[in-house]
Image 1: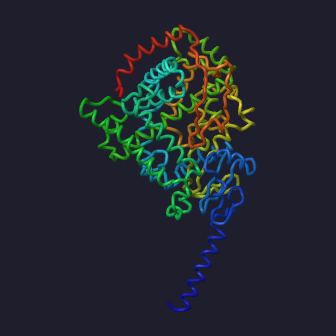
Image 2: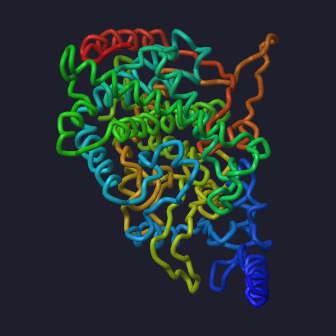
Length: 530
């Protein structure tokens, strides 16, 4: 190589290094404000390994309702202004419905998980199938019977095993979705597929938390460094991949074998398989079509119910007021049903407050822009990841006075379903953001709302929830801190807490046992119990 070429190569190398050092990680002109950046890494050093939603709240206090972070050359936009969220994610959902290119998530799922799919043809197919199955009319006509029956068993389980109170909502929500998806119930909290799912969900949620894995999408060279420097992230990624493919594959194979030996139960996966010659879905896509619904249908509803019980123990005046309303509508001869929804506005407020007070998704899942978007004179660039700071929005003191207090009057007058408020043209009407935004609104919103209302209304009808007592019969104080009493993962759930659970009367116990005996014959007999 001649000397001039060597000089030129050296000069270009130096210029390249200078460019990277001076510009990579730097906040470009016109971006929303944000904390000072460092060369190359940008703001990566400011993103914690867990509890990022709390960190983002502090940043919002300084930089406002729309701020930006840089991670390498990538841009993160964090929104906690309800007006801007409506503008970016709802009104402009045509360009804000993609997902980040997450190496970790795509390694685990092969890109077939609805949560991380871009808004392309496979995503539209999945969404269409799920919308047809879980639209409001079908929930009210068909699924509500299964939901009601499983809620009755949950009451019976609280009577028989009060010490396992945090497992009963999990079994309840899991059995509903397993029955509808695969025609297979979860008769006990010891059922293997339930135990496998919740163990998987803990691992999946931990690895999805922003900051939980090295930023390999922004800095690909990190893939080649020893994983022990980053919490063995690659081994954890591979372990979650194996867990998912094993459980989701096992459930699909079970349905396929049953179809060969005893025919179709007309569950969701049966109907998908009936039309799969036309759909053309691979086995891996079928695994994850069912698996993603299993996840969403099991964890969110149960987490809200457990958080609600947690609150009822600490705020007995709320429990008393809700029970007084229920007692005016429902006597001791039956448990509440979905048909009582319109007559129980305060209970509806309790349900909404449970989703606000301890939001299951602190930051939701990010959207990605496919085009530049300008908002309030600031550039949201193509490719930017848009986070909704759900926890911050739900604890806005201007909208929710004393936001750390569980007060259903935060939702006084909000007596409609979340889907109706989400579709309102006025952002001020939105009740909460638990089900997402825009085209990414949870396709199971109608099923989820009915799950939560039935579960909470029946529990309030049936039981008194009080602080547990020690050996001296003194109340044990309940820790309700969002920092110490709740997990700091992608999905925020209550840690184990103690409480005293007492049936409100013998007559109510008898009603529960009678209704359980009835649904065993009329509803549960339609499904497999494995």
